[in-house]
Image (tube, rainbow, N blue to C red; front, side, top):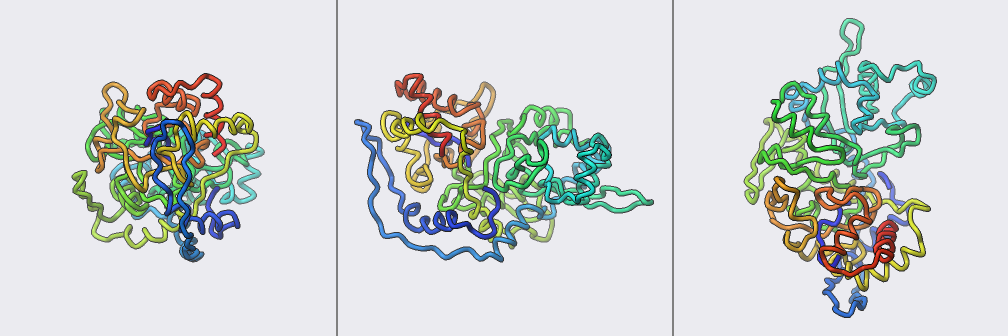
Length: 431
């Protein structure tokens, strides 16, 4: 594990920091920004950090965080022009997407947005979950995570006239506290249940070839370049938490702040009204005549930076094995040479070539994702919260953390025993 990279991309929305989150924020000025660049140690000794004087960044403005949360959850940046006018998704939803279908493709429902009558109706079966009209009703309540619909009364009947998507569609899920797919929001969590391709493929505006590509992606996968270069190589949907103090946000390190990622996605993927330009990848896209993106980026970024990676659930790993695995992480397996510092990444100081990764070459017929990026390289992904977002590697080629360690063990010739693979996997699960 000594040379990675894109090991994995990474509790919920916190408008007002808890004591632990505030402590973490204070550490950014010192421990994170002064993260040492570790070099591989042939004898496996754990490197020691160089002491530096910590600084204390200002606390984020609660009003700005509240604004950012609103943008993250509910702002479409005017992308209804894409999802409604072009793809006609409002007609698809109205005619063919009932709640059970929606849940089956990974869409989530915010239980906090459901009135008591609706909650009771779902429980006693009086609300028909096999009717698209119920989906329209949920959209009217603003209860479908990441989808915003405009519902108007036409001849006494609720009609979905426009629909758009938000950041939360891919980068939020729910805690399933009410039922599978229905619960309280968990902002920043990668929605690895979401089959975005299958949803897009429902559009009557797409060709048969386009639909086949979208259907090939599967759950938790999305190709953020397909609409630009026409190549098909889906990537795992990344989390939007645990990014504070990290200056390489995407898996290939194209941008040095979240605002780059947000602008790229808002304009080129969501279809929001605004402009994105990056000559390094030959992309210059302008949607509409009024910029509905730029002014919202500061608050959106502040909110995302407030989202801490979730701790491992109690009982989800073997503590004794994890303790042994930690010794392997900083010793025999040399993971720390790239997954260094408090955030377990050297992304702020360097990137890595595809030859240094264990997730390339890609599957047969799939283009190298790095070759489609601005840097042509990969970052070392942070490991906090890694337990939450299987599958792993940028292309989802490792189903479990055990698979991840086994892949490194084979390709990096780490000579870990089966017991050590299990121990190291348990340590990763604990992060």
